Image (tube, rainbow, N blue to C red; front, top):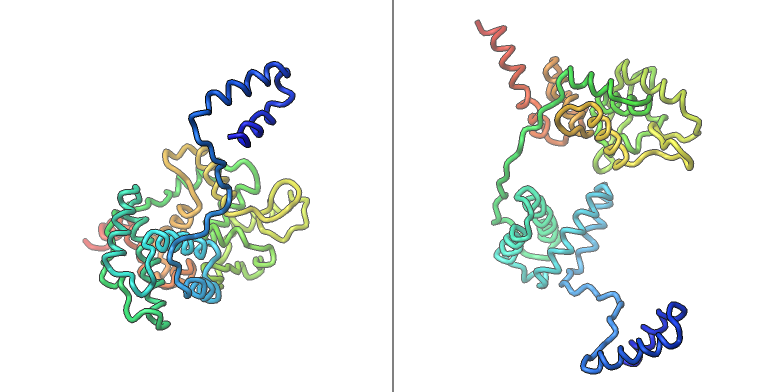
Length: 329
């Protein structure tokens, strides 16, 4: 109590007169006489979860395999909570432990989609542990995928795309939109794109996607014109394709691109949100509707599995209806 009173009065020093200080101290001592006051510890509490020795090795192996830093952070976040909650040695974790943990996530308000994403992370980690000999079997094998509703993403119509173009305030915004649409790139790929990655002679754009995987896409005439106009307005010497508008100049981050695209969408007044992946989705759907082979589209988008690309093929039902009406008579 004495230390608390001294520290408290020190905070008031210079703010009250000596007489007022005496009065406050007397009242404080009388009021707190029936209380036990202890100073709250500000020490960092050690992690108490039962973390397996192989955990760090697993994350390092993922990094070596080319997993993106963002994905590694997500894996670490999910697995940290998993170990902290279950708090059992790795070889003692059972299928029921995982089921109970996943059920607990529903009680915390996690959506089925989020929970299934975490299930996949746990299954991947535990399967790696089995392959490496840390555990005899994967307790997550018997947990089935969690069903969730996948809402179909409706691509931009040709008219909406033109409205988006008109809503751009400057050459930088227009270059962003045209690059996203022309290349079908991910926002993370655009954020690290360099001027030297674009060859205007061959129209090739060198993209580095998930896990630093390299592929080539292309720019169309609109994108080339928009880029060249934008670059003429820049006063910096940075090699980034899209750069900050003020010093120190550097490439804009993923979150900044998302914000710019969202603001363009608000000005366009589309009646729905605009985001980079919707433009990528529009590119894919438009390419299929205009006759691009689905395996070529898979290569352009950087999909490992053809099933992922086929999602866009399913969206083109309107095109199928039109073709059926035209050709099947």
